[in-house]
Image 1 (cartoon, rainbow, N blue to C red):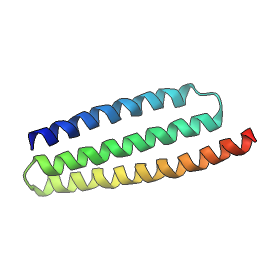
Image 2 (cartoon, rainbow, N blue to C red):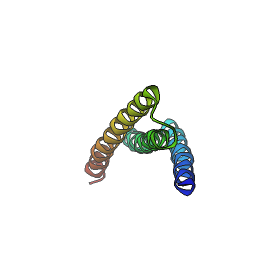
Image 3 (cartoon, rainbow, N blue to C red):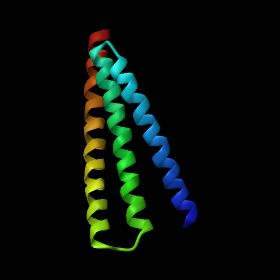
Image 4 (cartoon, rainbow, N blue to C red):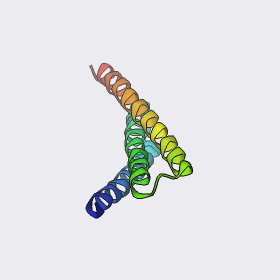
Length: 101
């Protein structure tokens, strides 16, 4: 079980770092399609990070009502970010292909 917690912790650190990297890339991008793609990737990684935080919170601690509520809120936010990132990535990648043709 301890190994699983470490895997979740490493996943949180990696996805947090990738989210920060894509945030910097999005802010420095001059093309709007590139900015949208970078922001979509940032949302995807942020959603995965929030899901991992919710998972580790629900598995690591005892079932307190407050912890379950906070974990559920993180899970809903993570799913929303993940869904929005996937939707935006498909939109901006299709738009970028139309512009390049």
